[in-house]
Length: 357
Ligand SMILES: Cc1cc2nc3c(=O)[nH]c(=O)nc-3n(C[C@H](O)[C@H](O)[C@H](O)COP(=O)(O)OP(=O)(O)OC[C@H]3O[C@@H](n4cnc5c(N)ncnc54)[C@H](O)[C@@H]3O)c2cc1C
Image (cartoon, rainbow, N blue to C red; front, side, top):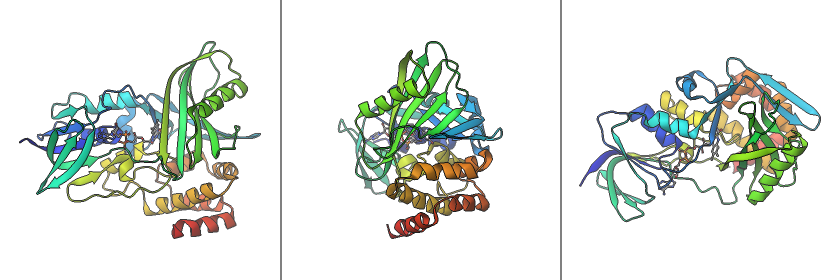
């Protein structure tokens, strides 16, 4: 019976990163298990450049030093040359992590059951095969389809026949329907002809895919005035806006979204699991960031005017300050600025709501 040193159950973004940064070509045996391993997924992972993300700068696909927010007749622009907004694509990440590796083998299966036997684990696959290992990194998908508050989105990459003139990233454009929860368009100009246009909602309930698609096409028509385009690819996601506490025990470690890497106020997770892998930090997020996020999400969940709250916060911060908060390394004074940008009574109610939950 072969007992692997390490098994990755789920071989997505965080498992790939953990393999690359901790175990690449070390003298140990590793197995990765994922039924979707060979799928064509190629979503974008966005983050602001920081010192811990610079080792990955060669695989950054696009970067923008200016980003914008829109609300009715208001536009706020942030700029940061030192910490530009960057994206890495999934397939580039996968290639980077697995390049020239000889100590990992892959099983294209689902893992149905994990059982501890003495000092090793038994993993039962969907074909009843058993795999044995000494240590497990588990990143199997988290169930966010229940009625918890979540971020849900569909995005299309479009090619614009006559080109477009958009230069900056649009992180939130609230000039769209607001009747299904807090809704905004996220837009990234990828080159002179291609755009990523995403319809994102913060709410408890998922919508029919046709709803997001209608929002995207209406926005392209009305707000971008683009008439001729072709959809060449798409991505979709459902991300938790509630705290996920990892349940690590002995040699069983939960990572990625399952391990609590998601910053619940934004849905960003990619840079956080890389930060944890490259630093001595045990947690993905600091105590105070988690505290602020919980209050903020509680506010979003219980109030209708959150688009204005977001705009108020964006207005008070410059690009450097905003990116430092989003990446979890903001100074205390910046956190205070954010707290003071929130309505006082709403903030107190959300504080009480968050601590009582
Ligand atoms: C479309 C999309 C866009 C995103 N954009 C960003 C972004 O811009 N910036 C950012 O910071 N974060 C982003 N995120 C959030 C987060 O970074 C990603 O979800 C990231 O992929 C999380 O990594 P993970 O390893 O936890 O999960 P995944 O990458 O989803 O990997 C989990 C893997 O487990 C496999 N699996 C599930 N169940 C089983 C099972 N029973 N047996 C075996 N394998 C199983 C799945 O097939 C999958 O490959 C995005 C998420 C999505 C979905």
